Image 1 (cartoon, rainbow, N blue to C red):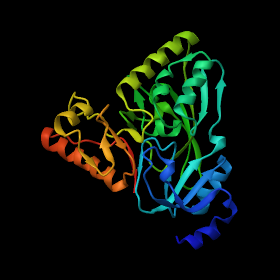
Image 2 (image 1 turned 180 degrees about the vertical axis):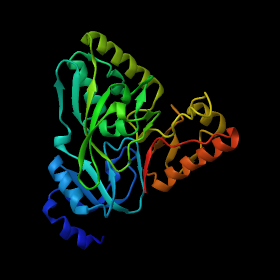
Image 3 (image 1 turned 60 degrees about the vertical axis):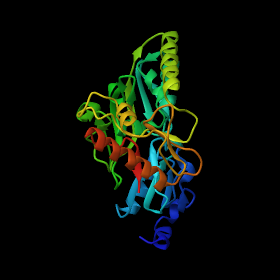
Image 4 (image 1 turned 180 degrees about the horizontal axis):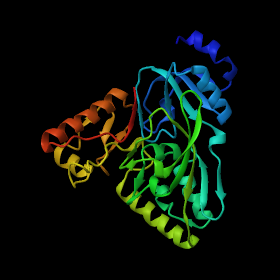
Length: 302
């Protein structure tokens, strides 16, 4: 649909809708162009109404913290949706179940669990991003994944229908699940186990220290670029990159991190093309040297 038509259609959402909105500051790479529509949904009722208005006539991309997203410099011809304040709620149900909105940060969930003396969430202190993004890709580290704690999720489809799905009815695999791509995650319930706060703090500190020792932090990166190719080799993806690629290779300001070669870095003014060229270069070299096809872990908005 054309901008003028959309402005008329979405007039009731005027405070929360922007057109030709710049996304560069909305992701950790600090790369990207504009989105035809940018909508910040404050609550479920408004989100459902917005989706029904669009009536599946526009492409939709849900943007969380932008911690694992590479955005094209060209205009995204669709709607980017960011979930707002009422999707940031977190609460305790009973003694060991946590209900969290999909916009809650992974670290916030970890901290909340610690405060309630619930173990099993320590690894989340090391994962950037939001609950929704973490469930979508079954994020994990230190041999733990989102699926290990998940009980159920509440979702909405692109025409505004809401439903709840039990974790046992979802097929989770390494960094993916079988849920349809058009579902938007609203909230989730997680189960922990009672533990001592001191023990949880010690485990969290140990994991964070290990992460900071081996991975770049406080720079323009989007975490792991590629998934470990578990079905093809026992080697980690960083080992394959290290033995296949000149690690000083760069395209513009897009570099391979000197701390962890599966992390790519924007050292200044890298463009989408620069970062995409680096990703493609590494993919091609690893395939040629090892015969292994790499699968991207970061999401690309084109």
